[in-house]
Image (cartoon, rainbow, N blue to C red; front, side, top):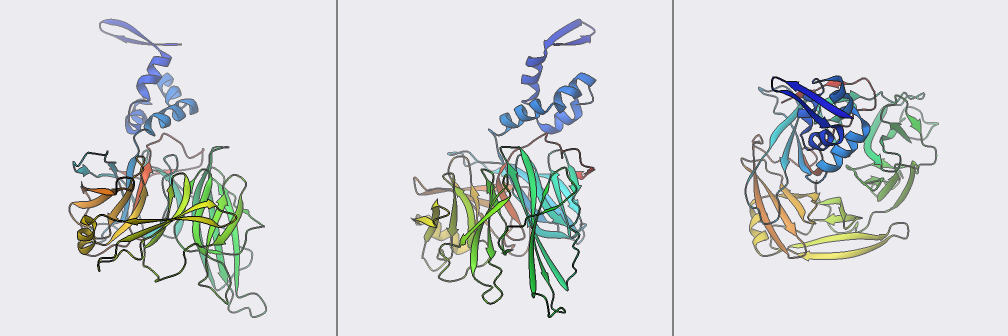
Length: 403
């Protein structure tokens, strides 16, 4: 098929495959506008094959996605999302964070990583899924429980199955029944919802546990830290693996769960060399100790972990003396990305190369300044956001405020 464009100087014929090659190099927001050019252009840009081709091209240039609550006075209450380019090795130039969109309402702590361009987060007690590039957002239906309790503690996780190409939302729900002495004090249930569906399915064989911290998902597997659901020993931590495709759980004791208990961001989960790894920053302190420990999974089911101890270079101690840092994750170059919990202008992030034991400091301009320390449970930075045309599977969505 060819595309004919007629102008004052005559006609120009563009083969459709050439047009697709041109269009897939354009940003998503431009393509959303170009849908109005003609019926044919709308058909091309909306074609799932073109959406996949555009995403594959954009995946070569992942961005940082930054999420933080607004300062309600005088601004309205809600959550801001910003995007910034990742810094390439050898490049020390500052980056500029651009406002992506604003979600009004009471900002909840839960924000997922970006999966194929979509994110999941909570605002005003509701959980929803959003394509931040197009601004499309859908609020998911709530779980209707037949048995009511005194308190309900829902926790959500977001995952993607690369085989069936499905996004799913996992809910772990703990219901307290203090007023019902004949029933267990806490009931734990797990449900899953396919994006595009309005029905939650209960998972019957899930081991009792209560999600403790945010998750990480890669290769079709969701990982998160959790309590094991044992009321007699509620502080015993486990590492949960949820297979998004088979909707099944595996749960092992959380590795390295000894020593001092750290605050937010001191222990986190990352993908390292294609495996799940536990990053332990509890011993990285201002007193000069600088051992950073990675526990890398060699065999999840047999609970075999490889320990990697990293002694940071001397220059790192000066940074720790001035700022509290948390580990945001890994980037495509294999570097680890650290960010300061102290929001300042400009904001500083640190790329650490474990192979060369070196780091570089990059400034990010454009973020609001906060007068207090914001733990990573409140503001988040994600390392693998890819702009996508992916729709929300035909569900009834609404438009967020794009900036």
